[in-house]
Image (cartoon, rainbow, N blue to C red):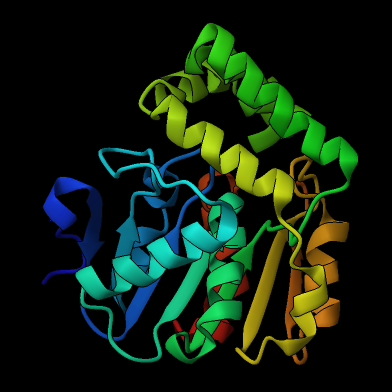
Length: 265
């Protein structure tokens, strides 16, 4: 398949959806909670020139059925996605935000099924202030619908400087959020509130790259550095003047940050 050709994926009786592009070794990407798979559109052509890139829609997104049961259930969901979408041995697994926490949980549980791990703006667990933010978003979405959290979402995905230059960012988040199943969003929030992977990081045996935006307010650099510090041999790259979703905000800088690790050159 050509690198710029996009294949729509549907499995599990329609309850698992995603897209695929390119050919070569497998690279699986898990998107964030406040974005969707389109957050990687700007880097997908370059990645698909080197890899067979599979981007599953997380539970509750674009037709994928929600799951319940916390991070363990999401890790099990990733295993099912690998099976249904025919992911070969030793793939690269990449995740941003919530998708990164899910990727980390999966790698801890199923390390033999992951060749390399790229974590982009990821938290292994949250302090109480972070947990409260997810409680507020879940409650706001339940009371006012997914569109009610558009402004909160924009401020978590992007930093103040970006929002000042891109006043349409809040409405862009609203459009994305309205496509998310509220039940799936709530379950993801609950999973993040209960997430506590810090004690397990030292046993992760997968080569790992951690990339983080300097101005990320959702999963600040100190939470990302915690992963890089506790995972043996992990590398850490911080992108100046960037927020929570580098592939969306600074695609060229993100590609430069992962190029050596992914052997893109």
